[in-house]
Amino acid sequence: MLVSVMCEYFPGWIEWDGERFEFENAPSYSEKNWGGGFPRKWYWIQCNAFSGISGEVALTAAGGLRKIGLGDTYESPSLIGVHHEGKFYEFVPWTGTVSWDIAPWGHWRMSGENKNHLVEIEATTKEPGTALRAPTMEAGLVPACKDTCYGDLKLQMWEKKYDGSKGKVCIHG
Image 1 (cartoon, rainbow, N blue to C red):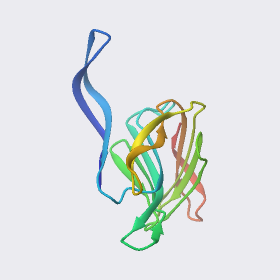
Image 2: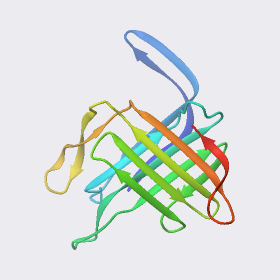
Image 3: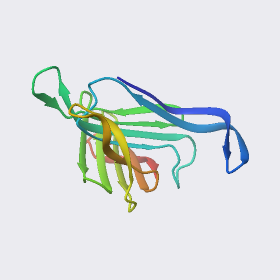
Image 4: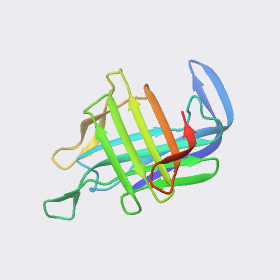
């Protein structure tokens, strides 16, 4: 089970280096993974601040390799979700297509298509990443993945033309 808050705004404060910073309506993101169904391999792209895109926008894109049931059957699900100006755009295999080209580290590319829209994402980092503990079937909670908050993310979305090609630009940043 995954609990995720993707595009919310909260008040609060942070104390850093002895100084208190208060904020109102700050964009936020949080997640919590529970259970033994955690994927063997996965990638997760999250961003809610983009250069060159005005207005409210948040992106979550993910995929991985997860075991189904007790046997040796695996699936490789994926999704792209975009919140833009109060509307949610969903790109998932059961209503369209999602494809990906994921390097072991430093370069992630995804694209998706639904009935009315096309989306492309490219994320890169030159940072080595920070090791994080994650649940594994073999050893429990151990350093099994890397994460970074430093990188570049390009998000583009178009309305789909009658022939399936790219039409009017909805998001470019």
